[in-house]
Image (cartoon, rainbow, N blue to C red; front, side, top):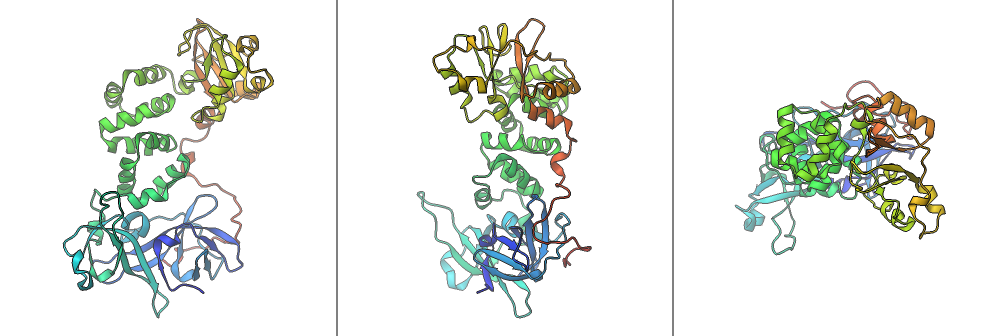
Length: 438
């Protein structure tokens, strides 16, 4: 049976079906119109993520039923325009949940004067088929590691949910963080970019250094700079330390020289030193593209040791595809570069064999000043996904991977564009207009 009352958080992730039963996408949020008086906010519609990750607005009047496993529309004709939030509109899950509120409900006298936090919004359909936010689920802070009891009160008895108050800084992000659990950094970065600026920075500040570093590396450069500058210099330096040196160098290269130097001086010298070396190279050369932390071993290492190194889950598949063999020291810049060993070769050898006996010495290394066009031809010629970068004295400086090359070959704003020409799977058709938004 279709529901006429539902909590907004229960809608997140539900499949959105057209009238023919084919999937259009998934619900990611509920768009509401918060009023300046105490009247119940109108539910304008749903924020739906298509298979291409593009987010569109679907008017609530297009929804014919809400069931436990899916939301069904009464038409397959929806606007495929990218969603853009307007003044007066609020995202129920991204912007309203975690807000600090006060309750003056006579039936909950024990809650009067207590700081509470919104954990969900109850929406319901009226006789006119409109949907409104009628109830608010609230909870206090945890005590002694236990969750506080959740109370559901009528909207009219809740204080602190005007547009002015919702736009104040310092909002909690507990519920918002829960939506990102288990997602890949690239997916979190995509969702982060979709948030209003205030919530974007609040969420970034709440992520730990390692997680935020992984996410920042997946953002377009303009967004990377914005996030870094809003963190404060101490926290920004910590995040840069957690980033891959080549990504940190790329980001610092986008900042004014004085600002970049200030951040480098706050970083641990062990972490900043390889970043400084990378900043010496032009960004469109092998030296500017490389990572200074490939897998490096001496000839005396065994095949078993090499395989153990490439099993490191923090390595990208490209970096794990090749071992570089050098004379000590093995930290870049290393001792004399001897050659490389391919992962496939390691898999064919007995574990006790030495990597020095299976070194490929025929692969020509790249020089740090090799231009991007030549690096691209290098990968196309040898069909590799990773290549060594060696200086004039035959010291290994680092390695370039094919994903680094692609990042520089694609347009600078490639992360900001939707995939074009993708079949929407659900018979959804683009239509002109705003799709019913006032």
